[in-house]
Image 1 (cartoon, rainbow, N blue to C red):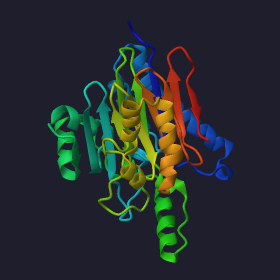
Image 2 (cartoon, helix red, strand yellow):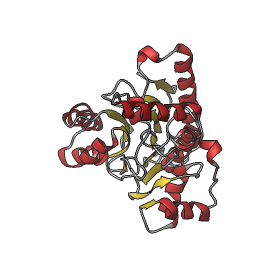
Image 3 (cartoon, rainbow, N blue to C red):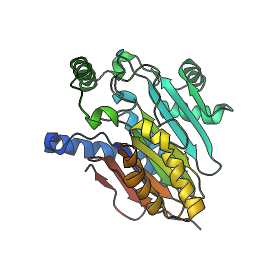
Length: 308
């Protein structure tokens, strides 16, 4: 017997403060979220797999320059991009991830290539790029990944660092995209992709490609894609912590995810959020930051988007 599908996406918890959000800009983000949700929803609507749905949704988010992944990836302090991505299949916990890659148009496709074409889970740098080339993935030059807003954000950050006036703007720290889904067969999947933090040191890797931290999926419990202070999410192993509370303490998805995001993260000074779907199709999208770009759809209902 088939089950109603569920899908959610996020464009990161690094939203600009409400005071700076114009109606035109807000409308643009909502349109971009709706557009990115559609490929994943279309896969599920025709009976496709959760794995294909999250791949398609995250690739669409990577193609949107508004979000910090793929084309919209932020710059390192050296002025280039080092992108991370991960994907996980809830059917058997198969997973693939890449870290510190550049020039690959859609890093999520590279993560899936690692999962499907190698015996490894996480590959970095040149080795990950080689797998992407073997898989015939699309590459782009530096011009494709250059956005004026991201470049100016780098310059502003470096100036503030030099003057000792660096603030705590989440739009520099929380940029990530992701998707989770349950298909009609009841299978779960999760995918996450990011450009990292503006002005990060070369070689820094966040939680997004770390299985159990920023990305996780198991049909028995849940699928999770996180966004926020990567170091905090790694220290808490946020995604796996939610799974563990469901498996070992009989918590519901809502109970587990809400406790981790709204309580545990704050204890160590972390902020951000996540999207998650359970094996029963229930969904939760908690955040303890000012907002989180997000969209979701449950079969039979109209898709929705939100920012704050």
